[in-house]
Image (tube, rainbow, N blue to C red):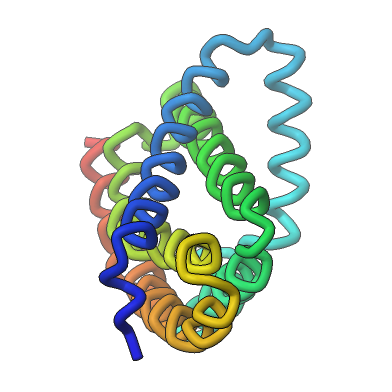
Length: 196
C-alpha cells in the first residue's frame, strides 16, 4: 500500500519541496530587511488582516486551539493533495508559505525587540520548529503526489492518493498536538528567558 514512498522520484520531490520552503523562508527574511519602510507597512497591514481572521488567540482552550490548528492544516494538506497534479500549485504553496514565514519571523523579531515584547529569533524559533519539522514535511508529502503521476502514470497516481493523504493527515494531527501543547510551552519559556 505504501510502496510509493520508497520510489526515488517521490522522495526527491518530497525533499525538494521541503527544501524549497526553507530556502523561501530565508529569502522572505532577507526581503523583510531589504524592503523600504512603506512596502513593509503595506505588507504588515495585509499580513495582520489575513492572520487576524485565521489565527486563533493563544488564550483559547487548548482543545479548541488544537481543533482550529488541526482543521486549518488539514484543509491545506487536502488542497495541496488534490491540486498536486497541477505541479505548479505545490511549488507555489511551499514558496509562498516559506516567504511569509521568513518575513513574519523577521517582522515579529524586530517588533518584539523594539517594543520590549520579549520576542527574539530564539523564542520565535522555539515557537515554530517543534511543530514545523512535522507540519512542513506533511504538506510537502501531500504536495508530492504529482511525482507519482509523472513517473508511474495516472493509474498509479490515483491508487496511491488515499495512502498519501492518510500519512500526511497523521503527520498533520501529530503536528497539531505539538503546536497546541509543546510549542506554546517552549514559546512561553523562551519569551520568559528573553525578558530576563
